[in-house]
Structures are given as structure tokens and as C-alpha cells.
Image (cartoon, rainbow over the protein chains, first blue to last red):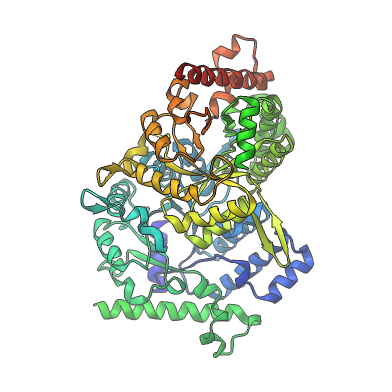
Length: 311
Length: 311
């Protein structure tokens, strides 16, 4: 799957992932009204609204991008009905041949991580049958529990040719509270990054590993250091756009082959129709997905010119 | 809810939580056969099997214990159908007036943690209505992202009188890989523990805080240190029984008031019927839940005598 991701990045010339994090506030009123009139102001109604919202955005952008990253919390908050919408979104993105990165940030003791890995990336045994459940292509993983919390994911990646992105340096303002603490003169995120590089070596695709890392766009200097520590890891870079990261901040997340990073934007794309920039181009809430397409094109252009000016 | 938990611990004289982590291997054949004959060897069949298994164990133990801790991974691995079984389990335990600790180990950037907190502990807004979804009483939280990943949980705890247990020192063998790394001469878990103590002060119940901590029974010395660092925190202690922890390892997790810790056992109770000890007492797979009741009583006795010999 890492090879497919890279192939799709090359084909689209877009090291870009659309974050399908559909907060209800982002969903235009007419989409919510229609869902609520069918199913009420209920978790089922909310789940229908975010599914219809996602579907329109995927339809408007899928040919421009290699991958999507649904954030499961935005579905799980609506309980069982929300999780159904997550599954529908994953399945629909697969129909459109998109690589699906499940932003689930799971991580637990060994036997528990094995259950998450089987359910999200692999297969689970039920009696004599092996069943596929969520079936994302990649998942994000929290490393706080150490190797035996991550290894079951790596094993599933090997068996089913899937991938993971391990949290190393997250994009949020307080990520430094623990991740930046100095251990023998180096921050914890470097120590974690070195371990991720070791895990990565055990699980290689053709050029890159099935084990990648998450490093926030909001920390470009740290990204530059981590790029060198983890040469074979694809870096998933959240924090572009609404969280403050810009194209010029991202150049050092990439390797000299122009690959090695994939940049996520969520709100900046899925709620683009709310920005004056796109309103001025004639976007209304009714054709919100057109703004998402424009925002994807703008993001690809921004990153492309930043990478070109690096050379 | 922290006050209710403590009240129930006092009433049952049992600082004990039953971990409802129903791996299919633990479920007796006759329970699986019945579920599979109705729903096939499918995720729905698996979900039905674990739900029936849970129900029997809850029925056999609920009057002895204050709380249960369903591990969501064991449900989520079966996709949407598994999540339905998780919800049924939470609801049924509430009917039996048990405190429900959702072992979900979530944690993300602020807006995402807010969604998890609302869905699992609080309410989510859908149009003009506030809806309750999973509705556990407590949830476990991963601290790797720092304060802004934890604060949304604390805010929901304050608003809805719920609680969290933050991972500090986990029970698994490789928990030391990052958690024990020295920062200014002290291990990371102490640094995290000090921060948990600060969060705890902002969210007090009557005697204990709504913000507690997870510290593994497998690390009794670390538990003793952390007990002092976090005096107002209830400590959730996994790793008793099957993972190797024993009653005598646990005494220093408790405060001098005899409170302050709640000890989880999962496999040791829910799969007790597989142990020779209970087979010798006439337990068969058909009456598996009787073994769970015996194992709960044995666990309560073990912890009680350890605490008495401490005095």
C-alpha cells in the first residue's frame, strides 16, 4: 500500500491528503436540513449529514488527490450511527480508488493493539472464517506504550501490505509539553523518531517503509531534523492551512527525490466554501464541493511552488 | 461519578473492576455456536457471541463489584457490529447500576479530543438537540499530545460529572521504552504524573478528583512513587492476575484511607472457567459465569488480605 500511495502521489503530482473531518459546523445548512428531515435531529441524522457532505467532497476532488484521511473521532462522536458513516466513507473512497488513512491514533498493550490492527487494517477470525471489518489502508498509531503496543500493527502491515503512521511530533500547540522534554540532551520526539526509523527498517516497501511518522507542519524545524532521522519513512504532515502551516514550511519534510511527505488539510479544504476567497469566485453553500476542488488545486500549487523554489 | 465510584467501592468493600475484554477465544463454544447459528461466522455473529458472554458475566458478578471496564478494541475489531455490542454492554451495565469505565485510550489535538469526549462522556449537539451517545462514566486517555489533548476531556468531566484515567505508567513489558526515559534525572512517567496531579486539582469531586491515572500492577515500585505524586487521583491499576500482578504488589497503590486505587482484572475473571482451580470446583464451560463470580470473590479476598497485612 505504501507503493500504491507513492505511485498515486507521482501520478497526481500531489503529495496531498484531504482530511475528511466533517464537524457538523462545516456541513452546509441544506445538507443538514435534508438529513434531519429524514432522520431527525438524532445521531442517525448527523451521521447521514456528514456522509452526504463527505460524498460530495470526494466526488469533487478524488481525481486530483492520492489519499483521504478520515478522522474517526468526528464519526465516533455520534456513536454507532457515526461509526456506520465512517465505514461508508472508507468504502466509498475505496470505490474511487483513493488510499484511505484512518486517523484513529490507537495504541494499547500488545493483545489490545492486535485487535485494533486486525479490525482496522487486517482481518479478524470468526469461527473458521477470516472477516474484513473497517479495512483502511493506513492507520495512525500512538507510541506512548512502546514497542509491544506498536508491533502488532507492524505485523498486520507485513501480512496485509498495509501501513501505519506513528505519532512523533504532533501539530498541536501543547505537543511540546512531553514530546519536547530533553532526554540525554535530545527531545523525546527525536528518541521516538529513532525508534520509528528502526521499526520502519523491518517493514519496507520498495523505496519507503510501511511504517511512517506523523510530524506537524506547525513545527518545520523539527520536521527538518526528523526527516534525516527517519530517511525511509513517509511523513504524514497535519497542520497545513487552518492550523497555520504553509507551503514554505513544508519543504524540509520532503526528501531530495521530491517524495517522503504527504500533507494533510482538513478544514481548509472541506470547509473552503466558508472562505471569502472562494465566495468571491462565486461559491455558495449550495455548491460547497466546488470550493473544495478549488482549495485542493490551490494547495497543490502552493506546495509545488515551495518545492520548486527549494531546488 | 468519582463520588459514586468511591461510594460503591465502600459499599462492596471491593476496589475491583472487571475488565470486559471478550476475546472470542475466551467465549465458550456453546455460546459461539448459538450466535453463529443465528448470524453466521460473521462480525455480527461474533458481536452477538461477545454480548451474550458479557451479559452472563455481568449477571453473575454485578452485586459484588463497583465497576466494569470494557476494552473497546475487543468490540471495535468487529467493526460496526462490534461497536453495537460495546454500546449494548455499556447500557446493560448501567441498568445494573455499575460504573462503566470505557477503556478507549483516546487522545488527539484539541478539537478532536473534544469530539471523543462529547461522544463517550458528554453530549453532542445535533441541530437544536443535545444527544447522548456512548455515555460511559469514565474513559481512559492517552497524554502524549499534552494539555490541549486532555483538556477537552476535563471540561466534559466538569460539565457532566464524569471522569477520566490518564495513562501514566502502563502495565505492558515495553512501557519503559519511552515512559521510563530520564528527563532531568526523573523518568517521563513522573513528569506525566505531576501534570496529571495538576489537572486533577482543577476537577475535584468530594475527596478524589475526576481526573485519575492508569498505573500498571506490574510496576509496584513505580506505583508507590506515583501514589505520592498524585495524592488526589484515583489510580486505575491494570495488570493484576493474568498479566502477573498480585495482591501484595498493590498495597502501595492505595492511600492510608484504604482508597485511591481500583484494580482491574480481565482474563483472570472473564475466562476463569478455563483455569484448573475453578474446574476443580465443578465449573464447566456451560456454567462459565459461576467461575467468574468465584474469581471475583477470590480477587477481593486477595486484595483485602494484602491491605490488612499492610496495616
